[in-house]
Length: 87
Figure 1 (cartoon, rainbow, N blue to C red):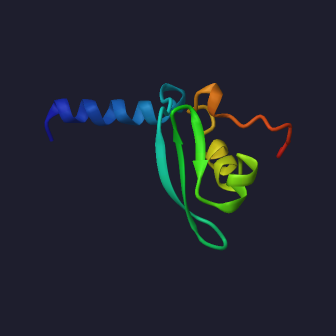
Figure 2 (spheres, rainbow, N blue to C red; figure 1 turned 135 degrees about the vertical axis):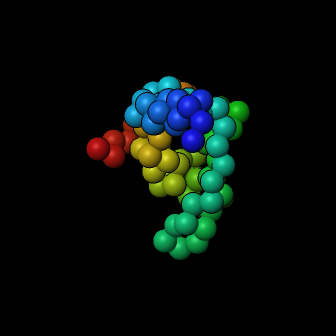
C-alpha cells in the first residue's frame, strides 16, 4: 500500500475519534419508524419530518433521535428546545 494512502487512513481514524470536527449543515435520511418509514431532514437551519406528529408539533421522535445520534455534530439551532426533557 502506498505510504500516502496509509497516512490518509491513519488521519481518518484520528478524525473519526473526534466527532466535534464535524458540523452538519444539511442532512436527509429515511427513518424506519415503528409504523412506517419517514423522510427526516435538517436543512436551512430547521428540522423537517414527513410524519404526522411533526406537522402538528414541529418536533417528533425521529428528529429527537437524530439529535441524540448526532450529539456534538449539530449546530446549536438544530437542537430542539421545546421545554421537554427526554433525559
